[in-house]
Image (cartoon, rainbow, N blue to C red; front, side, top):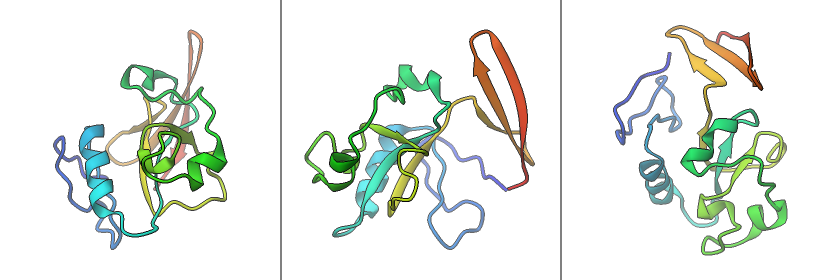
Length: 134
């Protein structure tokens, strides 16, 4: 079950023992991740590879990350995942580990109250696919 939380409110969702929190505020999400991360823990911003309409929010998945800099550079380097600025797609981080992740998605993934649905946008066409129970 997904708990709808007010903007910038952070509480564990899903009754999880790990921190799964929801917010609509990127500023609050970045601040929270920076407060949680300790020592050499890695954090990053990940976006759905279909999230073409996040550009107005300054998340452009068409920009290819350099995995060497994204995963290994220090927090003050703007190319670093720790800077929480450049988003990687699920394909770019596949097989690599982040300790703290901000996961963003567009209208391609929607919660309908009891299930997720996946919507694929191609030009003027919209296709609906059922993602299945979570």
